[in-house]
Amino acid sequence: MIYIIIIVLIIVLFPTYTHSEKNNINGIYMVKYNDHYSNKSSITWGMNGDKIFSVNVKLSLACSTYDCKNTTSYTCEDSMYQYDWNKLWGKARCGYYNSHHDDSDRFVFRKCSDNSCNAYNGENRIQIGAYSYDNGIAPYTGERPDLMKTFTNTILPDQIYKLTLTMNDDGLSTFDLSDINNNLIETQYINHENKCIKNYYEGIVDGLYFGGTCRAPIDIIVTYYS
Image (tube, rainbow, N blue to C red; front, side, top):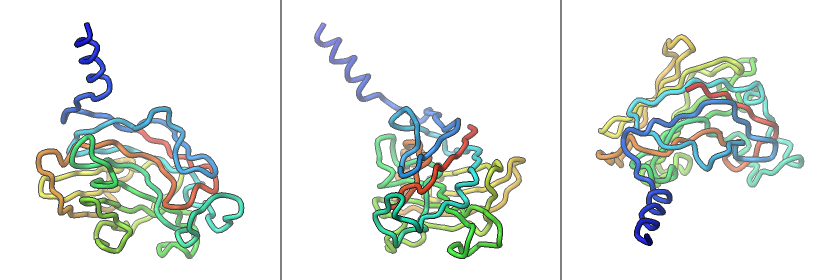
């Protein structure tokens, strides 16, 4: 009887994931004012083992207009990072138990509604980026600037766009931005030195997170359609 209990505990606490895991994000999520994390009920968004992984997203108007300059009304650890990238969607690489801070590919976003955005055109828009960790190297340290790619095209709030992440066994990750009709808008590429050929496509699903170092100065809402 004791052995049966032990086996059950192992299965529950340390589940075995395979390449067939298909979790994704669906629904409306919010990062509330003065927070980093979205209001999801579970610890993670699950696991995914797809080599080609996609989701449709709609970002609220606040995603294009939030103001990080008034740090007296919310928490920001370092005001030098007032315009850094917020995490939108993607997943870790190199195994279901590997941290996204070691190996991962994610789409990120930041507002593009004033001259702090180099693509600002007078409209309230949102800038998108491809953002990867490679063997523990972060995209913002300067050690590997090629781990962060900014899309030339910006997107509009309150419109649906398709994000597609394709992972290859040669370490190349492809980030596609398309419209709701699946018309490709732009593609960015990131090469990983850590190829982890056996399980490069397996990882924890990553979703909405505000920051960087600054917390959300206003409620940030993203709707996912998977």
